[in-house]
Amino acid sequence: MFTPSGAFSGFSVDDIPEAKRFYGETLGLNVTENEMGILELHLDSGARVIVYGKPNHEPASFTILNFDVDDLESAVDDLNSRGVKTKIYDDTQFPSDEKGIVRGEGPAIAWFRDPAGNVLSVLQSS
Image (tube, rainbow, N blue to C red; front, top):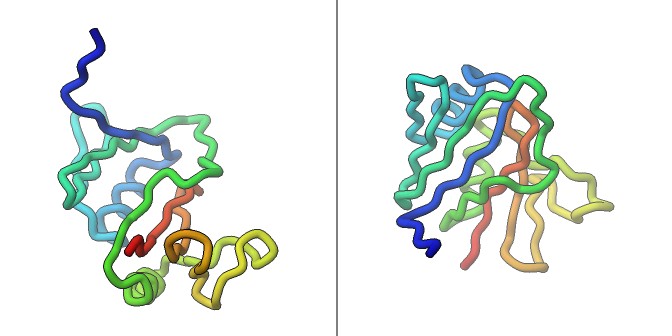
């Protein structure tokens, strides 16, 4: 019988040191690296996500991580001040304000990319 005691997600990048810097320093997440060179992102919710290097990495074209925040405007301003570009889609794909925040269809959301090109988001669900 399939009875998992938990679950976690993972995704690939093309440069582990750059990913460690981005997730740890730029985003300010708790990041550890194991003896095999795999990163673990330890989220405040208790969840963990693994990040592994892959020589033939291709960026995910879909959102691999969504960060839920209480104040989207402040979070986007903070990310932008750290050099994170939150307007990654043109307005024909996802009409948004000058910061890249899309409103009106579901929760307000802004997408951005990690250094490996993977798509992430910050959103305000309530």
